Every structure is written in structure tokens, then in C-alpha cells.
Image 1 (cartoon, rainbow, N blue to C red):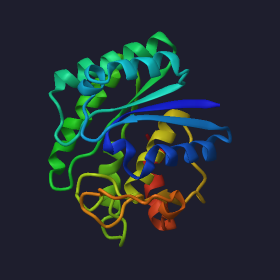
Image 2 (image 1 turned 90 degrees about the horizontal axis):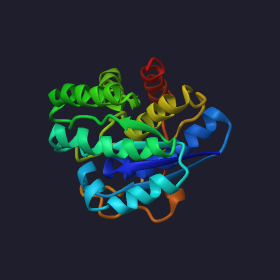
Image 3 (image 1 turned 90 degrees about the vertical axis):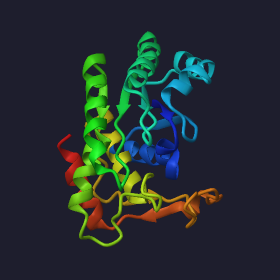
Image 4 (image 1 turned 180 degrees about the vertical axis):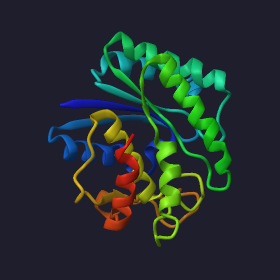
Length: 231
């Protein structure tokens, strides 16, 4: 049994992504996995480690997690020195108890693709300097976005141009699965989640979890799979 903690904000909790990851993990590994989440809308790692420090500390030190996925605020990005400082504090807590940190590299807004390079550099440097795993979501996202651009219903973005669609979260969960396990789910794994109603602010979500299950077309899933395979 693997236990994995997610720390982040709406880019983590959108469409119940940690649960989708859990299912992909189990499909890839053939062993059970439990996921836990500390994710709050619009919050930075600085907020997590100042305003919510005792919750983060307790969960990391006493939760018995195998991995901790660390996702920083993306739109806008905080000061780089703050990302380095507070990601470092989470990593320090993880190292005390043998939990493996995973840096979750985010993606640029749909209308600001040029900001992706700065995101990539920031998170790669943290991963290299701290000697921890990097889930290169943003890099795969950029690659897949162009590979999918001529295919209908393949937009990685939710309608707000910032958050992930069901297709985007399928990509995110697959990148995290590959980063943590070294494996991909089976090609027939075509399930994703869409917990939103057609509301730009997604202030209302589907209450019944069975209603959020969607199928990813095999062509789209195959292209995403190809983009993830080489990370």
C-alpha cells in the first residue's frame, strides 16, 4: 500500500485529480494506493507553510506518506525566492520521515504561453538543487497541446483558460503516475473526471461522483501517452 499526500491549490483539486491519479497508479502497479489532499483555492506554498503550518507539519510528520506532491500557485506565480524557500521547508519535513517529495511543475495560462519557460526553469532548478523528483507536467502539457491542436474536443484547458479540463487532468495524472512509478497505466485506461457544470467560475460541482466520470477518446489518450512516455 502506497500513501501519497498532495499539497497545493485548485490545480491539484480540479476534477478530483488525486483520485484519478490513484486509479492510474493502481492500474499501472497492480497494488493499492491511498491519496490525501491539502489543497485550497488560490493558495501559495507560503500560505501553506505560514497560515496552515501546523496542519502541513502534522500531516507530513505523522501521516506515514510514501510521497508528497508539492504544487505551487501558478496564476500568478509567487516570487521565485518564496517558492524556493517554502518548497524547501516542505521538503525538509518530508526528509525527516523518509517521504519522497515530488515537485509538481504547472502550466501557463492559455493566453500567456510564453510564461511556460520560466515555470519550467524554476521547478527544474528546485528539483535539481534539492535532489527531489520533478513531475514535468508543464513541459508535457506544452508538447501535447500542439500535438492535439487539430483534434476536436481535445483542449487541455477548462473554459477559463487556466485550469485543467478532464483531458488536461488525464495528462496530469498520467505524468504523476509515470514520475512516481516509472510506468504508465494500461492503454485501455481511458477514464477521467469532470466535476464541473458549464460555469466559468465552477462554483457548483457535481455532488454524485458517478456523474463526473467521462471517457477520453482513444486517439486523444494515445497522443497524451506518447507525450508522457519519454519523461
